[in-house]
Length: 172
Image 1: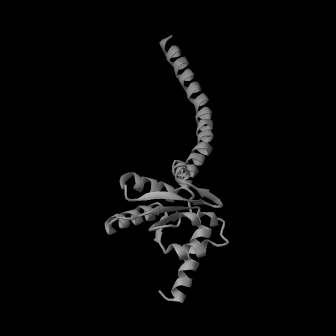
Image 2 (image 1 turned 90 degrees about the vertical axis):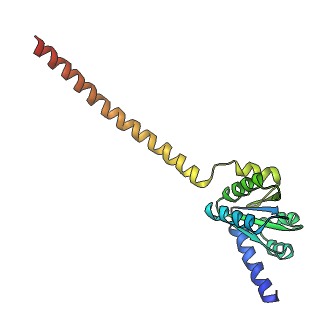
Image 3 (image 1 turned 135 degrees about the vertical axis):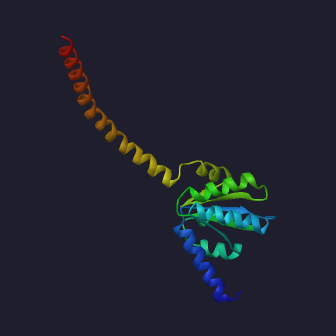
């Protein structure tokens, strides 16, 4: 890899560190190509990505970034799982780590906050952006359906009363 390629990788990594909601760092020693492809596919499906980069270049890219304190995790064979959604990459990494013991999560970063192993696990248990939007829409929609039910209820009550009166009148 020549100097121009290294500069390009550092620039790409810098953009990843700036724009990602969460970055998870893990060791991947012993993973097969098929297992790495599975991890990449899971991350892609969740709206994230997986990147393997030289630790030295990643540390250079971290300089001056909000998540600079994550540089201590970059030792050995590391892989970065990241996403704009602050939860997606952590969920993917946690799920993959449960199924594959060779994938060892070291920690990561969420904005300026450094995450240790327990922090990544805690983030993975948070609701995703899509889940939060769905619950907000449900909360907004619930009162409207209650109002519609309340408005419709008196009309059905009146109709049943009128039919009862009509039945009594016909019987008399």
